[in-house]
Image 1 (cartoon, helix red, strand yellow):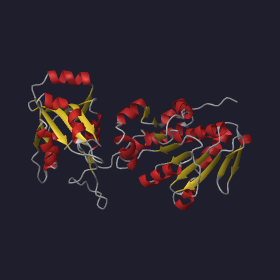
Image 2 (tube, helix red, strand yellow; image 1 turned 60 degrees about the horizontal axis):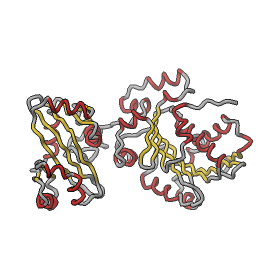
Image 3 (tube, rainbow, N blue to C red; image 1 turned 135 degrees about the vertical axis):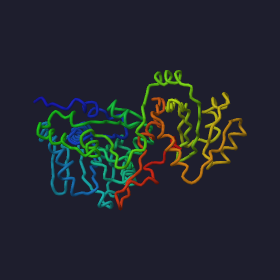
Image 4 (cartoon, rainbow, N blue to C red; image 1 turned 90 degrees about the vertical axis):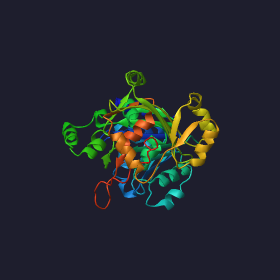
Length: 394
């Protein structure tokens, strides 16, 4: 009997060429059900030990376990599988593949499992350390390992946002626009309820009636939400060609700024033009990296020295600034004091428009993401704090 599968998930179901799979979607997008399809089909093709995990074991029976059972029934594969309720287990009678269900609320049982080659984590309730621990469990040499994370988006404060978006240099808009991205052995997949053929009109109407802005972003659009106060509302991202046209039409002055980082934090060099008369800022070039030595950075930004450009650099690294000046760069310390970050942000807020080239994705992400968070105790906006460490804003 012919079975219909949501088109947007066909490539995902068939792809096994990546190590990590990051599925982000709205409520009702069918990401979990299609992951169950992907895993059931894989278990029929070759022998696998598949670990299915949620934060709390008790939630597995009514989620992943039920999805896998429903898929077996949906695909008319009942004769090929043995499904057990106590303990929760699904076994493929053809290949010997087995699905094991565990909760991170009993880590001792996780540590005792051997030869796991696929791990499915449903809902991103885990901590980053728990995620890394599960990756460490897949040490088998019998098969290529894969780890799948299916989740509704949370806020941008969640570790997954930093891990899969910031650290990998992926922008939210790129993910929402392209919807499927292959990058650095990670398969990104974005979906919404509109990708699911099987939802009822009543269910859709109820979902679309959500009015809360944060919940609407997460539940309806399948996008990361915001819980604080956005700092910049004057941003406009433009193409490189549009940026060139804007630069030709301005008589503004060029400026360059450098923020230092290394292993954890990022080095960020921003090149821009400020037009005080038009009250417009044009950010046309960025350099954004970590884990690089001074000599490597000097080579990467050689055009700065060759053109004799003046750069205002973070005064927290006077020795580094001296190294660059000794190498022929015109680097000068920024005069920072108490409240200097807030003062700088207010100057940026005074521009009617901040144009950011698409060739500066990290700059746009940081400007667009930057917020004053809410105080957890009072729920009041804390204007002295920021939700991220913005290297391009400093």
